[in-house]
Image (cartoon, rainbow over all chains, first blue to last red; front, side, top):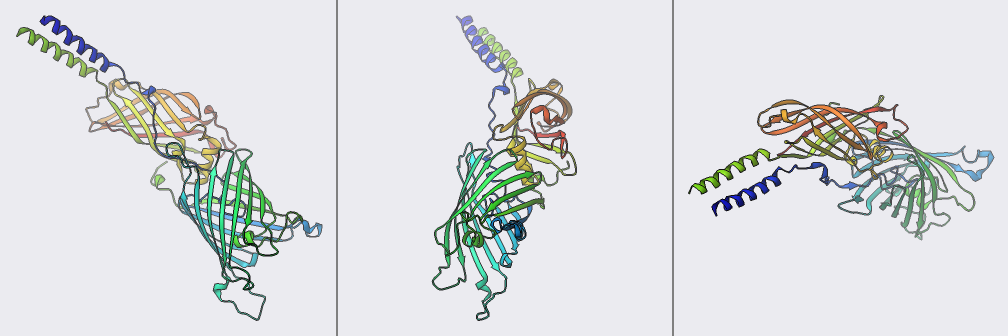
Length: 299
Length: 183
């Protein structure tokens, strides 16, 4: 009887022994890295064509941007199809944090100075935590420094300011297609007459379509709910080309302004009349401040 | 009475063998992996601070896993290009290594010290697996091991294509691993 008991205990122990002696197999385990799968590269640059895209400049990166807009192709051969005439903007954008970009610029058009800040409120994510869209807020102010032609009225400094507020809602649908909606409010401190409102609402619709790893097609259209008479809705089509540290953006547009008030509300050209302007943006990114993960590493 | 003694002897004997066979898994989720593929003047280097790694002391089995998007570059644009143009990280979000520490038996985990190790296994990057054979060190401080290693991978072996490989980007990327395990 007691031998039987010994036998039972021994079997149980042997069984548990075998269980324990079984090799732990790490190869069959599913590793589960939990870090959020952030969607990157919704657009290839911080601007779609003229307007802001959802992309921010990386933290600690200074982005030097030169934008050129030539005259209308419809001007004909005498002006070499608009190439004789050009407006340009030089700008510096800096990524204070990964979600916050600030920038300043100067355009030759109306001798405008502009400054903006862009803050990413929501970041598109895949995987564990699924967020289908990114949302950013952009505030910009534009100062027109060109002297007034009129002599009957001396404007206050504040009269020269206009402001733009934008909410950018973007989604990278897949590696090939991204879309963005940009509800926009432009406020003019001074308009030409009392009949004209100071606030102008519009909705921007932008897209990116990937042709190859380094070449993307872009489009940008702003529908104006409040229209200034004599101006048109801006529509631009562009190609983004990436080469190492640069992004080249080439485009045709009926607008040749580069600040929100100018290209959204004061577009003089019309696509139907062939008033298309060729333009390009060139950017170069400089690393100013190292990300904290990379400090103190001896490569 | 005699029988009870016998039972206990058997139990103790069996328990003894059991503890001999017990396996211990060392793990970390915050290992570091450095990557350097500078080919010219421009530094093309990144760090990943979220390396997931485990190893078993009895068998020497070891695994590493990283998310490609977890690599941090100095230049955001470079990071975007790394993910989109070279690593295609939406298609191949992970790189991993599965292999063995071949001389695990020589390591005494109860003593502080540094031991050389050789590791052999399969490294999968960009969906392509290749055999890797490398050496490194394991350092034990108060029972906690740290594994350090350095090796190079030929970028083209893993089916990674791009304009600048062999120019601005070196043909071989240097990879440094530094994982401090908890037990």
